[in-house]
Image 1 (tube, rainbow, N blue to C red):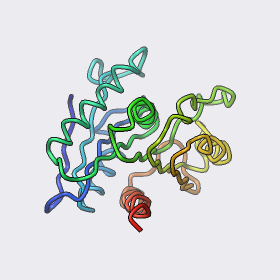
Image 2 (image 1 turned 90 degrees about the vertical axis):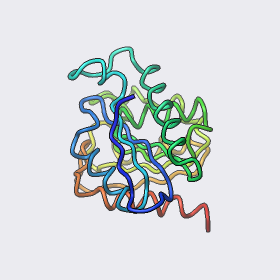
Image 3 (image 1 turned 30 degrees about the horizontal axis):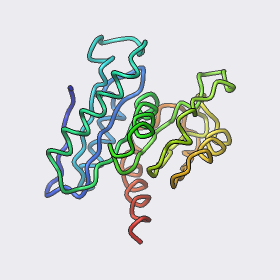
Length: 202
């Protein structure tokens, strides 16, 4: 496992494993901004390089989905050891979010909830090839944050797809955003997810 830990000023109130998309790594500006925003909000945030990115500096993941999910599992285990008394959640942008969701479908005990940023619902210009096979098996809450101009899935398509998930979900559209959400949105993302989780305590 390779990653960077963002620590809050005091004791953490929750923890988060954050994984990147297929074309980037954990040092991508949105990843750094999101992890820092969660730490500022009192979370312990770990942004990781997925195994495919550790194996090579450039290029997309090829045949590495199982290894990448295992990498997320190991990161979650390590983070839970650092903060054993607080809830642990998974977050990811694009491919990282997809791997986090697939892992949660396989083993709901890995984390209590998921934050999915720009979920890659289908390949670009191939809307019939939906990546939703695991959605009916998702039993933990999930917040989707998605740009209205995302070429990997329209807001209408994402909204329809998440209805396949039996757990509690919410979709937050980001007006005018494409697949790469702007780093300046990071504090708002942390607030949205905290509020989403807080609904379970009301």
